[in-house]
Image (cartoon, rainbow, N blue to C red):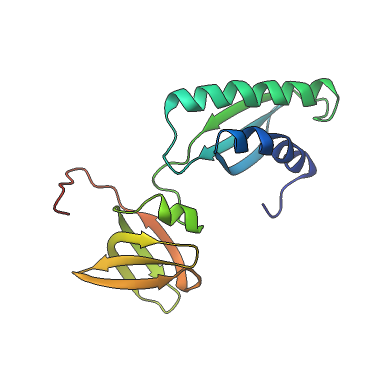
Length: 160
């Protein structure tokens, strides 16, 4: 993750094997100052989504790993608060796995050519997504997407 601090890189490296065992992806890791403390925010996700029980279990494991790093002096002297959660539906779709995890959901895409597409994701692979727009399947190459996010459906039916 570009622009990350050495401490964030250290934490991410320490968490990688733990999360890989659980088949969970580290979506982001952020360390921000909060007075005399730091807030360490860890966002996790997986192909099947993340339940609250999984977040709680991973939070305990991440906390234990951070305690080990802290005891060894690798985290510095400032105390920290740990927050572990999953990304919300308003997260931008920036990686192929984000598209794959949202198959069958409505998406709004701002394209690099200035157009906007609204449709339902019907397929996704590492290079492109297929979106049903007004009954027509359109292939969307990820480099052609300027910005994309899922649209929330409150009254979805199976026909959508």
